[in-house]
Amino acid sequence: MSIDRDTFENTSEEELADLSVPDQVLGFLAVSEDRAFKAREIASQIGIDEGAVSTALSRLKERGLVEHKATYWAITDDTDRLEGYSSYERATALFNDQLGTEDKESWHAHAPSEPHPSVEDEQ
Image 1 (tube, rainbow, N blue to C red):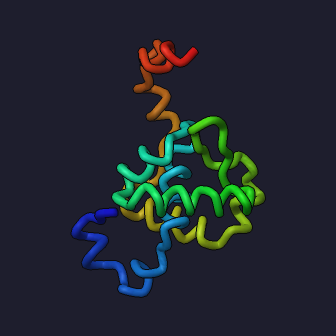
Image 2: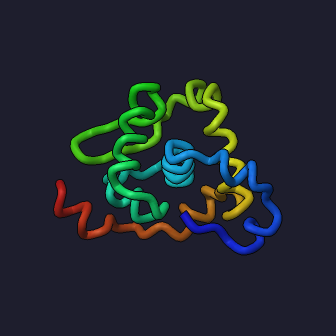
């Protein structure tokens, strides 16, 4: 997974090394909490081998941190369980530092009123 230059310069080696594959997967899903993804999509977005992502997803599922249906994966909506997972907090903090905190109202204001054609094809 790439990081921006500012993060590279201002983040310690320890903080960068501490973000494991499961942490990166969980952080990515947390940023997109209202969506579900295929493992290959997650791998492509975070720049990690699909096999490693699939393994991480399986382990996260065992811990109840992600949900799996057909070929799609999403972060759990059990906030108590997520808050109890310290790596989630670290990953979320890193992503918030890199990308800024989520502004859900802004997302909703710019969301299309019609579903994407691929969603209609799957129904």
